[in-house]
Picture 1 (cartoon, rainbow, N blue to C red):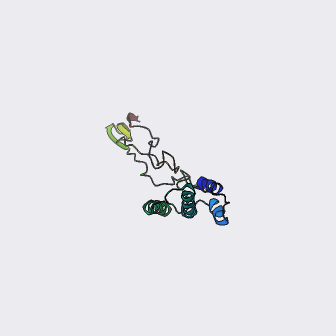
Picture 2 (cartoon, rainbow, N blue to C red):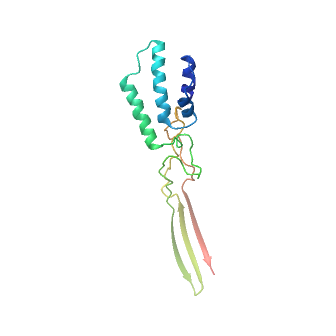
Picture 3 (tube, rainbow, N blue to C red):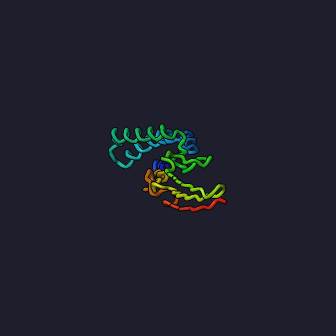
Length: 162
């Protein structure tokens, strides 16, 4: 929206208002959309087109309201991770089941043999990465990869304790 807001005034032979310039320095979607709506109406007049339909305008209004409710300061859609390193959009988390079983057999008073079977990521579950956050790109909102985690690993151990 910012790039459109910067370009339209030159097509309308006017400059940006103080409010529009202030909103361009921020990242909140709702004020930017409120600035853009009258510009689009003016562009339609200049081009001789019908004005934007009420249903179309309400659809965009609704979409902007939902995005604003999800992310009031528009950080999640600009950055994949917060400053603390946490994913900015909610994900399902890492699913990884590890399991181990063991059996011991005594060999006299102080010696014993232990057999151990260990499995890492036993269910071989896929954990999907965060969705794309760059608004306006083809990858926006799409999950295109899985989180990097090793596949299922199984190891057997035979120990002799003495």
